[in-house]
Length: 304
Length: 304
Image (cartoon, each protein chain N blue to C red):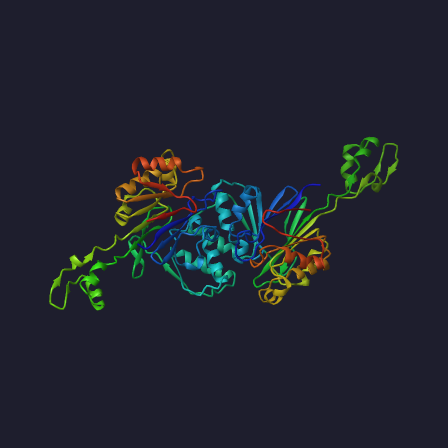
């Protein structure tokens, strides 16, 4: 299977601390490198954790709180200064376009690479990126400003032809594509080999959902059901549930409940308040509800 | 003498490297803490080098290239989240106001502390901050966008009354203020003590000039003559003089020439291109022209 990993660049909320940068993650899926959120300091974190900026062609910004996007301009300028020529796509709330443009104008910068801005659509599940082997969708979260979650999904590879049988049955190359599409094979003597006997099922299509920032909201379950990995913010423990609600954030228990109800295979919690020096309490709380929970940590790589 | 120090938070140009953040400095003068430029990552550098954000009431932004201001919004938000109540003043090119406002609007943020924005005036030496014991002026530099230098100066303490004579001549407390202002002292018997005999000269009024970014420009000399410490950008060595000119930056030799011609007591070079792993070559070049040169380094504290 091709690699599908999440690299945490920052897992803190609101303000940077000594051990946590604010939100940013890199999703490596198939041959693509996606950046999800881009807090201040993201370009330094990319360097620290050996992710080449130039590999990133698609950046997804969940919402316009500073701890999720203030590193974006620096990243755009650095790509410019490093001589990037490839297209760069940004998928974000529409107000970000003017925020970018006004700063390019103020610095009299004309980027030397093509920058494409895609405004996220409100209120719906929307496929915002698609290529032959993967796709990314956005969906609404519930927070104090318009906020989107992102769903990263592999596309089906189709059934796989059994390599041992290609030679044994003498299957001509021109038939292979049809067999992959589900047809049976008929050899020169007219013998029929049923498709299910000469192919194996497609690989499992892995998926990752990114949900930050959001209040506890069961409406998102329909968008993220059965994902292999759910990143859900867990800013507070349950003893700060009132604060969480007031600030439209989630507790660790709530993140775990969403993981349970959406039948996620694994839960990754993050966006921790600076009041937590480590993640033990947050992890314990989530694991009582959803045992297969892990905690984000700057530099951590999670394999799907 | 009260402390007057410069703490380097970032001394790199354009993009952050492993050992250099882009431009930002803290000027401690009298009881004031001034921030000069505020690149991405400045709030992390403040924490790293033990400067309390809450002490900073005045921020000076030289120009609107990202490596000089992209950390400002993060700093404003963090002050807000940490419950700042004191006034905060920003002195910057006027376009920065809209850049701040648009981002406050996008995040639906209403700062809980008063923020005052002061647009820098073009083409003149302008006193932009003044209190009883120090002042800050802005003056024009020559760069690819409108850019300002800053001059930090102590105010005269006035002549100092000789403490040994207060008791010896039995000088009443109510006379001391007048003597400090230059008057003679006449005792009860009518004997006159001339002011210069009972006072010592005022302390030397220390000054610091910040000049970044700028092409070599002798027009600035009139603004910065005789400063105790001159920070002058030295992005390149002389073998990249053409690049320096094209990008409207200075070489280390040019920084040293400005220090020499302006009769600075000491030169601090910085804003080093990422091509220089260390500062040896840049320092050597400057010291050939102006021996009392030191190189900036993230975390370095320079005492005036």
